[in-house]
Every structure is written in C-alpha cells, then in structure tokens.
Image 1: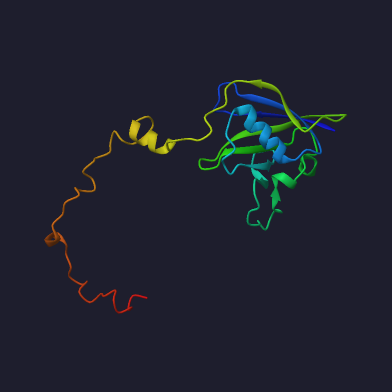
Image 2: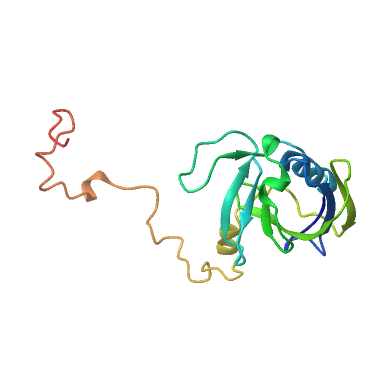
Length: 185
C-alpha cells in the first residue's frame, strides 16, 4: 500500500508537506524525508506521537531507544514500520521537530492507495518551514516586551537592590540552628 501523509504547522506561512510512503517504510525514513523537505539538520531528538481525534498524544515513536512507558510499548523509528501504527484514513500524528519547546508538525494519513513506492518521497511542498529551533522563550519575550505581559506594572525595585546590610537581618531565634551537627536531617 502507499500512504499519503500530509503535515502542516500553525507557525509557518502556509506550510504544508505531502509525502507518499510505502506502507513498509519506517518512521525513520519519514523522519528523514520531513527534515529534507523542511531543510532542517538532523541533530535534534525528534519523535512522532500517534494522536487521538483531539490531538492528544498516545503512542510515541522515538529516534533512539528510551525508557519504557508503562502504558505504551517503546518504539524506535528505525525499526517501526509505518504499517505498524498507521491503519486508517484520517489517523493523526504529530512530529516533534523542536523538543525543547514542544513545537511540532500536525500529520494526517490523508489517503491509502493500492500499489507500492520506493521509501518515502515528498510529493508536494508549499510554504516555508518555521525555524527549527526557537532561540528565545516566548513567555520571557512577552513578559519583557509588554505584549500581553505584565511589565507595565512591574516594579524593578520590588525585590530590593543587590546591596544589603547584615545588620538589617533579624537573627533572633536562629542562633541555635547549626548545619554542621546534622541536627537538621
């Protein structure tokens, strides 16, 4: 069988990639085809997740052997065939391309065709892929930029300055504590 798998991303301008893959191809072959089509280097711990109808993660297919999850078997891209997990049209998956910030492409098994093909090929590419790795934390950016953040009301002196006087510390009641005698633990 030939699987037609479509990936999109809400970050890239009109980003869409359509792949034709032999059902006996591996997730590793699909992974390589995705990286090539997006012009990403192969230097991240990417993974696939099979998803339910609400895009909730279920079975993970990892790039390398990882610790086992009790709910699902540990599956590795290089030894897992697409036909092991893809069974019906409309089936959903995500491809995590930026593991640090949990950014991913949304995938769907859009069609199953009779016949065979060689491995996995990108047959349709539109739009520009988003930058693979996010270099700044979007939460920090919002907080510091004032765009939806809280910095308008933020008082830089809230926590005091970096200079303090030890005489300002109230040590009453702390004289009997010693970390040297092991009494704390």
